[in-house]
Structure formats: C-alpha cells, structure tokens
Image (cartoon, rainbow, N blue to C red):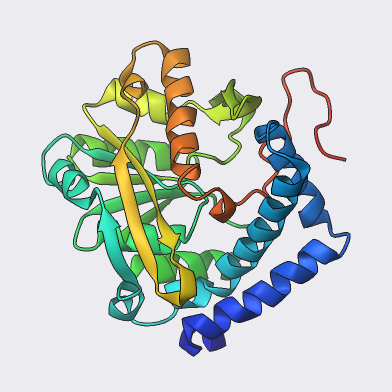
Length: 283
C-alpha cells in the first residue's frame, strides 16, 4: 500500500489492467460471481456485451484495490488533487451547510474513498462502517479516514445513535447503502429486478429527521486523468413515510448511480447471497 501511494496513477492502472485480465481469463471465483450478478441484473444484454462488461468490471475491481494507497497514505491534499472535475457539488454543499442534516450515500462504485474525502472536506461528518475482524486493519481504516476529519462509528446500536445525533445537529452522515444488513435490519427489495436484502436504516433516519439524502461516486476517468465526483439528491420517494416505498426509492437511487458507469461497480460482491426463500444464489 505504501508503494502504491507514490507510484503514478497511470502505472497503477496499467498493473490493474493486467491483473483484471488475468482474473477474467482464469476460472476464478471472483469472475464467476461478477458474471452471475451481471447476467441477473442485465438479462437483456447480449452474451458478447456481458463478456465485455465482465472483463471491464474485473479490471476496475483490481484498479480499486491498487488505488487504495493513493486514498489512504499520502497527505490529504495530495489525495484530493486527484479530483479534477465535479457535478452536483454545489447542491450538496448547500444542503450540508443548512441545518437539516445530510445523509450521503456512497455505493461501492468508482473510488468511494476519494468520493467521501472530497465532499466532506472541511465539513463535520460521521461515517458508519463495519469494523473488520483484525484490530490492526481496523486501526488502519480509522486512522487513514480520520485524517480527513471524518469520524468513524461502527454498525451497531451505538453507531446508529451517533449518526442520528449527528443528523439532528445538522451534520453530514456517510453510509455505504449496498451492503447486506442483518436480517432484522433489512427488507427484501428489488435491486435491478432481483430481491436483495436492503437496509432500512436510511429510510428510518429520514423519518426521524429532516435530513436530505444525496448519492454519488468518484468516477474513474480514462487515461489516468483522475476522478470526477458526481453527486445528486436521491429519488424523491425516499422521503416517503411508507417504508417499502422508501426502500424501493433507495435502490432506484443506487441503480441510477451505477448506470452512470456500470463497469466501475463492485459486481464481485455477493449482493444476493441471502434470498427470501432461503435458496442459494451463488454456487
């Protein structure tokens, strides 16, 4: 990771391309999961298009991993220089500087670390995260993210209480909305047409506060030119008092973001691992 922090972005992305092609050519598990997800979520695409998308997705998966050092190690000013363009930022900042509070959704697409660092720079923000099992890795994550002024809080009752209080203070709260929640914390809701256990937390936070909800990502630009941060307010129905309607809007918002750059989404994640009938989706 230290080495990756100082290598040129162009070289890292070249290495990632080689790695991603190897993942595609070999019978790897990550390829099987990626292809299974893409076939299920885009059933109308041709076999040729799905193969191209699988290959591109695996290259981006490798790129995301190799770029991690660029996000975590250098001085924050150096990491932020990688953002060369943005879209929708003014609307987000206007909401963030009001007293309503903002829920910022950061799906696993593009470089979500850079996305959060850029938008929350000079803003008071609290991000919910799943602490890893290894204590050293947990310290690395919290230390690297906190250097941007971001406060990390775990995905438990204490963490939920922390982000609720932050919203009531009118601050920004960051949530990765496409992770599988505990059964008691989610409902099965369509995601690209497939039933996916979807967190109810965002909808419940909206109902308890006056918070605005935004979603976006840091899009990886071609030829190692850096990133374009794209952010926009969530689909209006996310504010519905009907929890099911709000959850549908949540997934529609994530889908809209993913469709801006399908190949940069983390399709290797077992998003449909839990099924309503208890059946197996992945081999």
